[in-house]
Amino acid sequence: MEMKGAVARACRLLATGLFTLVAVNVQAATVESMRLWAAPDHARLVFDLSAATNANIFSLENPARLVIDLDDTQMDTDPSTLPLHDSAITSVRSGLRDGGGLRVVLELNREIEPRHFTLTPNDQYGHRLVVDLEYPGESAVENPIDPIEAMIRDQEIQSSQRAIAQQQVPGVISPPVPSSPTEVQEASPHPRRDIIIAVDPGHGGEDPGALGPSGTREKDVVLEIARRLAAEVNGTEGFKAVLTRDGDYYIGLRQRTALAREQKADFFVSVHADAFTSPRPQGSSVYALSQRGATSETAQWLADSENRSDLIGGVDGSLSLRDKDQVLRGVLLDLTMTATLNDSLSIGGQVLEQLGRVNQLHKTRVEQAGFMVLKSPDIPSLLIEVGFISNPDEERRLRDPVHQAGLSRAIFGGLREHFERYPPPASLLSWQRDNQRRPSGDEYRIQSGDTLSAIAIRHGVPVSQLRQANDLNGDVIRVGQVLQIPSS
Image 1 (cartoon, helix red, strand yellow):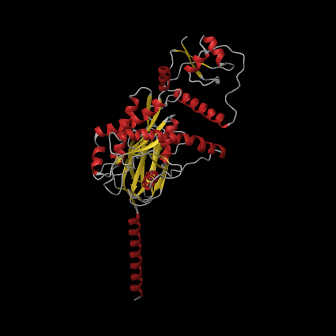
Image 2 (cartoon, one colour; image 1 turned 120 degrees about the horizontal axis):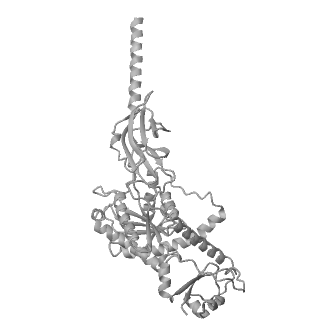
Image 3 (cartoon, one colour; image 1 turned 90 degrees about the vertical axis):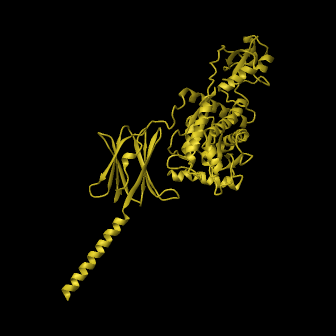
C-alpha cells in the first residue's frame, strides 16, 4: 500500500510539473510580424509580439551587426520579407539562442546608434518592441538648407530681437550717431533669400492616422497632398519647401517643429485629414495654436486625438524649456508667441478663403486648439484638416489626384498671398517689392558715424527724396540699415 501511495504521489508531482511546463510555454512570446520604416536620418524596426518579453540589444563589429536577443520568444514570421532598401540594414537572420530564446541579427552597412523601448497594447497594436537605428550626423530632411541661408536667417532673427528690445525701453530709438561722417562703403548685395515653408505630412510609419470606410489611411493621402504642396512651393520663384517626412515613417510631434526651426523655416504647415465617429461631417478646417485652450469642443477633441499620436510612436511629446531661465521664458511667451500667433491667424484666414474655393468648409473661421505640433514660439504655423476621411464621399475625393492638386494649390495660394504682402526683409520677394515701388538706383548700407543728410550730399540727392525712397518719416537711421539711393 505504501508503494502504491508513493507511486501515486510521484505521478501527481509529474503531472503538476508537466502542467507547469505547459503553462510556461503558453506564456512564451511569439514574434507575429516585423515592420520596418526607413527615414533619412534613422530606421525604425518594430517587433509585433503576442506577449511582453525582455530584450537585450548590443552591437558587434567586423562585420558591423546589431544583435537583438529576446527571452523565451519564438519567430512566427519571415524576416526576409522586410523592405530593407534605403535603410542601414543589408540583411536579417534569426535563430535559437544558446540557452533558449530568440536571436535576431541585423547586418549593417553604416554606422548607427541604437536605442529601443517597449510599448503596451493600444487600440491599434498589441505588445511591441521598437528598435531605432539612428544615423549620426545625418539630417532628417533631404536637401537641408544651405549654411549661408541659415546665417542670413539668424541675422534677421537677431536684428528683430534687438529692435523689439529697443522698443521695450522708453527713449531708446537708435544707437548714437556721431556728427562727423566716415568713409562711404557700398552695401553688400541684397541676399534675396528664399522664403522657407516647412510642410509636415501628419502621422506616418506605425501611426496610420485615421482610417476611412474603405480603408484609406490618413498618413498616405496627406503625404501625397504634402508632396504636391511642396512641388507648388518649389515651383515658385522666391520660395523653398522642406518636407518633415518624405516617406512612410514616423516623426515625433516635437521633432517636426524642431526640424522646421533647424531649417530656418519662415512658416510651418501641418497637413492632416479629419475624422469623426459619424460619417456625415465633411469639409476642410484650419487651426492655429490657442494659448488658452480650444475655441470649440470639436477643436479640443481633435487636438487630443492628434496629440495622442506621439504615444503610438513611443514618445511622450513633452516640451522642456529647462535650458531657458525664467526671464527668457517670459520674453518668449509675451513677445514672440503673440506676434507668431497673430501671423498664424492672419495667414490662416487667407488659406481658409482659398480652400473654400475648392472644397466645402467645415468651419468658416480659423479655429484654435492646443496642438503640440503648432507649439513653436518663433515660427508661425497652421494645422490644416483637408477633409473628413470618415465621410465616404470625401474619402473618395481625398484619393483623387485632381482634388489633391486643388487642395495643395489653395493652401499655397493663401501662404503666397500673405508673403507677397509682408515679405521677410532679406527675401527675394522683399527685394522685388522694394525695386518695384522705388526709383532705380544704388544701395548703401549705413555705417557708424553716418547721418541722413551726409549720405544725401555724398550721393547728390535731396534729403526729402532719400526719405521718400526709403519710407522714412524722419532722420533716424540705424547702423547696418540698407538705403535705396534714387537716381539723381
